[in-house]
Image (cartoon, rainbow over all chains, first blue to last red):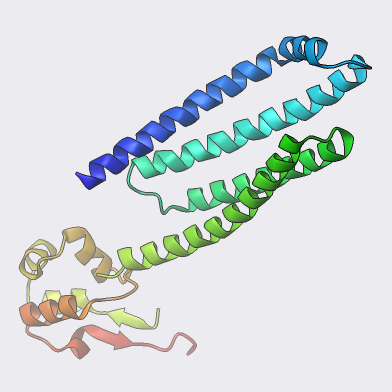
Length: 154
Length: 71
């Protein structure tokens, strides 16, 4: 029963990840129009330069999020199959860590260009997430080694 | 690996097959195959005890040490 609950939860999280992936694609596809509309409502000044700046930053961010969500989907796929301790998950966590660090650098650039409290909070969150994923990748690598040893102990 | 398991030799001496031995010692056929082909990284005392009991031999009869560095 406990195992069933865990499987239902991992399936539910996987569903959320897929929904987020789809919404990421939709947001990126509609970004040129939505950004123009938002800037015309909330921004006063040289719109052309800021529009180009935000477009570049948001597209890089969107692609990185797509990448991170896809790697998370791979991890939750293996969790759903009750076999999470595989080398592919170690690779996925390392990739998420690198992508988070790049995101952190992008937010750092944005902090100097157009600062806001939300940018600084996001910068901090992605920095911590990156470090967290490096440590988790190492923990998973050790777990994979222990699992292989255990599987080959007869 | 420096430790070799001569399980196949002892099985041949006792004229016992893989299926029969795996049933008698209570491990799966696949796991016994891993042991027989020297793919295992470790062996539990309980498994070794069961193998020795069923093959009527000593651990030394199935385990052998060879120095990997020797040419």
